[in-house]
Length: 166
Image (cartoon, rainbow, N blue to C red):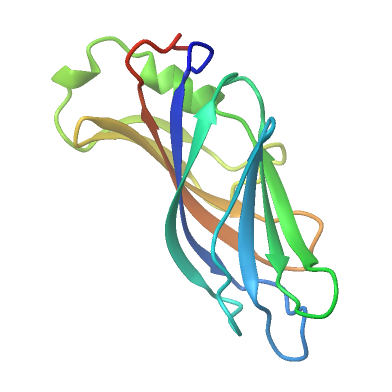
């Protein structure tokens, strides 16, 4: 616990227009990996527009490590098929969390906007806000290495007593 910076909560909301990997649909799930930590959502059967609405919690030792999100199609009798991926960092999110006196901001305050670019895989503008005494970031990613698909997530951070911070 001494080497932890905190807990990153990744709410995997939904997928949009994911690639078909079976005959007419797919059975998608999401894997999130940061350093040696790896977590996955449940499988949503027969759906290329799945709603996971599932929160995964990563114990963060090095907040500078990239996070890789990969979507797979679950198969019973063969290897699961990749359905695209995206890699992102926490730089903007952590910068917003370091802003002074966040607790004085009104609920719903916009802290930062990140525009889509060729380097960040965002499908649309991402906003970092102060809400319910937390910094939240909504992200909609266009998946790479696949013909179609987007995944929407939300990030939040939980400080741990005695953690080293970032």
